[in-house]
Image 1 (spheres, rainbow, N blue to C red):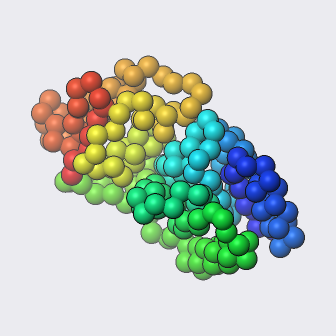
Image 2 (image 1 turned 45 degrees about the vertical axis):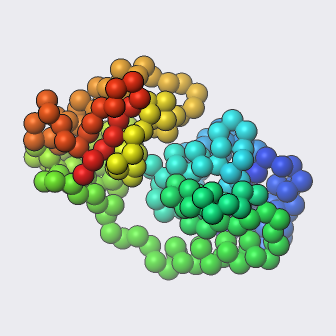
Length: 227
């Protein structure tokens, strides 16, 4: 039985969609807010996720962004009333595979879900999740990296932070956003922890760690990765 994580704060929509999918022989796990969605996503396997954007606690864009730091494979559909082009673009940039506007017809949602599951099951990603910059290389699937110190293995948190920065290359990422995306929304470490991670990245990957060209500090705001 295929498993769906349905994240929707409107009870009537959540219950109706859940019932319809169960009638189609899916197992459906629901969450009414972003925090519960992240908890389910970290603890269980799902074949697909359906996520509303306007959620309490943690919004859908933030949910998907955090999920994608450790899970690139599970297909995700945004289900939302936000129908502006910039909203759709932002959703796809965060890592969603599809975007369906409310109000919707269940048959269309079911068709999109089946097509995404079929596509991902027929075409598994067998290539390592490699990222190369300068003379450095990182495999986000295995956490293995090559840099100034030769080959080494990143910790999970290092890999998550590095992935966040590289996926937003050229953008300034605030310390608050880093804490929320990498460490979660319940317990934050001190911002000094982030500073120490950045120092480690410079030591790993910069030709001259004291004069970095890839991992740049933006005073009072956060950090920026530049290729």
